[in-house]
Length: 223
Ligand SMILES: CC(C)(COP(=O)(O)OP(=O)(O)OC[C@H]1O[C@@H](n2cnc3c(N)ncnc32)[C@H](O)[C@@H]1OP(=O)(O)O)[C@@H](O)C(=O)NCCC(=O)NCCS
Image 1 (spheres, helix red, strand yellow):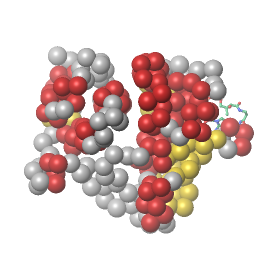
Image 2 (cartoon, rainbow, N blue to C red; image 1 turned 135 degrees about the horizontal axis):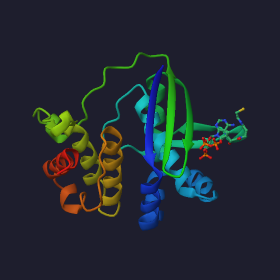
Image 3 (tube, rainbow, N blue to C red; image 1 turned 90 degrees about the vertical axis):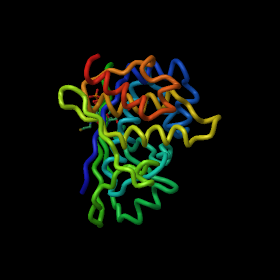
Image 4 (cartoon, protein in one colour; image 1 turned 120 degrees about the vertical axis):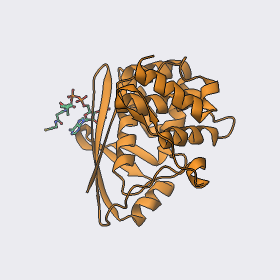
């Protein structure tokens, strides 16, 4: 049995929906998820909760996904009495079946500021030892270089490169720097007490992992 959890800023998601609502929703969510969220008085709370739930499920699944995560293949559905459930599809479902996943349970909660989710995955197979993110650096055999910032925080360079690789691997029409920025912000705001602004994560930074790591280092050291 594996557990995963995640927390997402509702405020940040609301801002993203204001700026690129349709593209953002279509990238991450199924039509059913979108229909549910937009039917609510404050859609951003439900959207943020589903983002958190998808991340939590990915953390709890007993395999490491390499490459861009097909987020719509991890669908959050609503069962009886409002209780949420998870419906996997496509390649994620196939991988889960191969890994012996027999049940996925989630729970979500949200307020004006944050949405959080917990996922519990039961499987018949033992979870393999997590592998480092598959990046160009690791593929070429170069060791991942962590960045140490003041206060002892260490940025996992592999995580940065993974997000940037996902972003740059998309087709030109799909490449959305705001989504990559959101992923990075969620990743690092959750891991460290740091706030990244849109100015920190601009287009130039997104094309350069070293620059991104420097930005994170500056933010972490409060410079
Ligand atoms: C369950 C309930 C108490 C949650 O209300 P809340 O604390 O104000 O809201 P939270 O932000 O903590 O949680 C909201 C999420 O709870 C989940 N939820 C709703 N009803 C649920 C239920 N019956 N069981 C489990 N989870 C539920 C949903 O995922 C919901 O988010 P979503 O609408 O985006 O899918 C409320 O929906 C309720 O009173 N429902 C009716 C009574 C009920 O079914 N209780 C179940 C326990 S006996």
